[in-house]
Length: 258
Image (cartoon, rainbow, N blue to C red):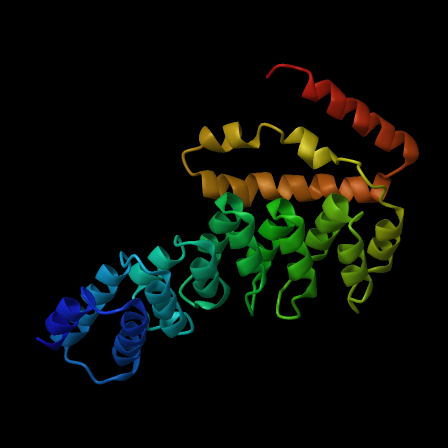
């Protein structure tokens, strides 16, 4: 009954008041001793509030629910698809996203999605590897600076191969206590503007994944390990002549029809 009255009230209330009431509803869902019927009604009301035209209301919902493992998953996943400022709140903090969710979001999401996920604490190795592989430069910088991220050595090498020429990333790498001496030397030797073997060999990655019956599994179990291996080879064998060959191959595939 109370929830029904709430839904009638929000239809005419100002946006600011709707946002405050929405936050109160979400907190009641998380922390109050509601009956099963009241809890179901509150969840239904929050699902309806996802369509509220004011971002203030949806932001209030995200801020109230983001940190809790008791939040309704449909609401959290819907908020993750909202406008970037709202999605970032749940992507950076909600414990309801599993590693497979995060890897998929990094692979398909915008730069704003990638940077939000890079801020998660803790951030597990699989999601960190996905950011290192396909994340934008800003997401990789945030990842490197995230003390709560579990980053494999190969993922750090991949960031070096992709963005080792970016000053901010170079500086962030150099201050890491766990940076291997070989990787430190690799950062110093990466030349700006050079592409890498993984980018060339998997230039048709989208078509490969589209042909798979399970694209996410194919990416995590086949494509990503292969690309990281190529990255390690590039770091290990890098030379002036090798870079010239890569540039030549890059030009060749750029002008060769698929």
